[in-house]
Image (cartoon, rainbow, N blue to C red; front, side, top):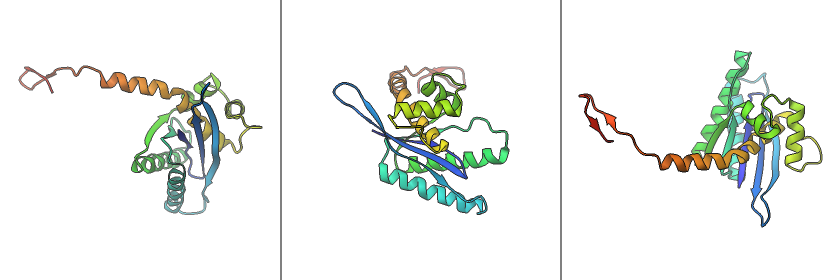
Length: 187
């Protein structure tokens, strides 16, 4: 199973494609592709977004991921930066959804907790853990690519919980609704 992790950004959008292979003893996780989509800040925003969209579409077409995991825009001090991050996150989700791919979002603290065991882990700790989890010879570079790989790894870590929650949700009892006149009705 391929998971495409996205660390959205308008100037630098990190991506990490990881593959989980089931074996006889235990599942192996490998890095398939790590990188950064870069755009020129001097270019018009619409052109930069078009570049991001084309590159994201190429990744989805090339790897046909089962899931696209996107780091959720949680908080940014700079509103302009937050807007660009949100726009690229939206593009990634739209491209994946249009391809029929499942889309999930994780907050930065969820990713850090899942990978480093602590929601306040710094960049260095995250890069080291991503490198170790993927069996890489060193820290993955650049940091945006490592962050994207961490988002993909986070999903693989939390995927069993998502499946269990979906099964439980599908078995949930549908509660009765109350009509306008106050009578009870079932949907």
